[in-house]
Length: 264
Image (cartoon, rainbow, N blue to C red; front, top):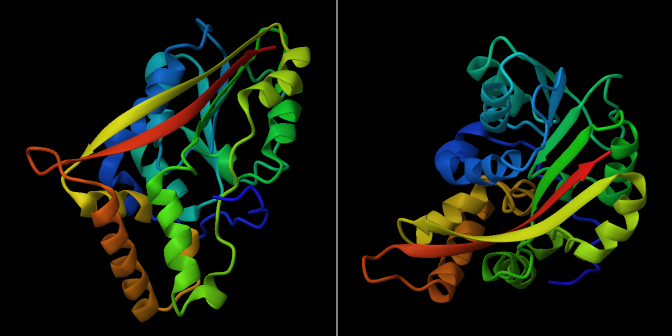
């Protein structure tokens, strides 16, 4: 996977239904991130890139007396979030330019900033918008070197759809030390760590279904129905060769994620 992927696109047309096929697995990282947030009773909390509200629900449970809201760019995700949490406020917005209301004490970003252009500087801007003691807590997939992602590029560049898909790769994340040098001067405490999850998929097609809800979307979105089916079939063949079955037929999907917690 090349760092030259400067034109990676946010996957338009998010499907909440597809995303939630693996709700338990996708909710584990925000649960682990929230466990490290050192706030007892914040008054205002915002879920950045709230998706279908699964991470927002964790925030409501942790802080029942807080004003909890969510921001996302996908109308379908926001529809699902509003149905799930009708007492919360959800708004459509672009995190590249979005700014929190004064008095916001927790900005929580679950698997969203990898899609935001120039996201390190966006994180710095959001951190500086917090009051003293406010917390920016972020989790991002750091899996662009994993076979599932490398094979997306292989299939995209070798098929008849190459000129249509173009450069749909997501950039590698910066190094932890790069985040440290940028954010540490802006806060009193900064914690950065990686967790490598081993998600248990029913079979190799489970890996395909997982990424159809996220990183495959910018590859599939510009294609017509026939080409999408052909692309997915080719990708599934590659996945079947790259991910071997365990003794019970299941497949382990290694999924590295980067966590950042900054206290203003």
